Amino acid sequence: MNQFVDYYKHKGHTFGECMSHPDTDLMYVYIPKNASSWTKPNLKDWQWEIYNYHYDNLYDKHAIIVLRDPIDRWLSGIAEYMFLYHKDVDSAHFSKSFFDIIFDRIAFDDHTEKQTLFINGLNFNHCTFFWCDENYRQLFSSFLNRHGMTNQYSKYEYQHTTEMSPGRKKFKQIFHQVLKENSKYQYNLKQYFNQDYQLIESIQFYAG
Image (cartoon, rainbow, N blue to C red; front, side):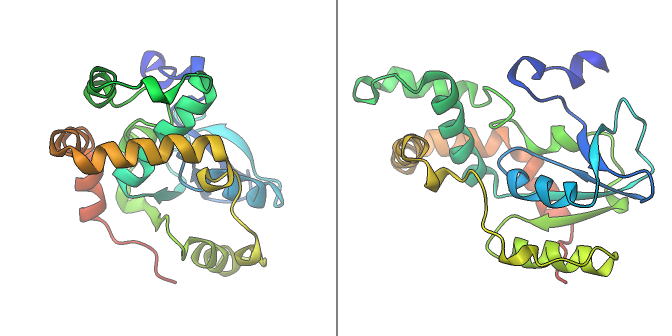
């Protein structure tokens, strides 16, 4: 188990990371690039703390999970990866061989990995799923209100988005254009994220 959970520990994330409070049966299992930078501070307002449902054995808690379109998330994720670790690279020198390697490997860190790995071992019948889109803030705020956490979080702006960072935005635009022009790269991504797509198609998302 440790080998799986700690796979991306060197990049700053361990699988199973979540937030909860001793007095609630809820936990929020966060997935990088799925509005987690917006969600975590809001829960911290209610004294929710960091846990790991694998190490802390929180499998019986009802999980709040935010999912995102796999390709859209990957584009934001690869932009984040490039900005964090290779932001000084000259994108003018990106070659076909470079892109072949990227779209062969696909997952380079926690921002680009399958969403299903972040929620491994959970009973999906005991989860509430949110879709990461323009309606997420309103729906999440509504969900908290229904659970006694009165708030106005729907008015808070998202944090650390790709669009707010020129460097990240540049990388995202590059990979988006290359992906749009190459059907093989599209196929590789869809195959790699097949489990994510299967999950998304099999569940119902919170609608208020």
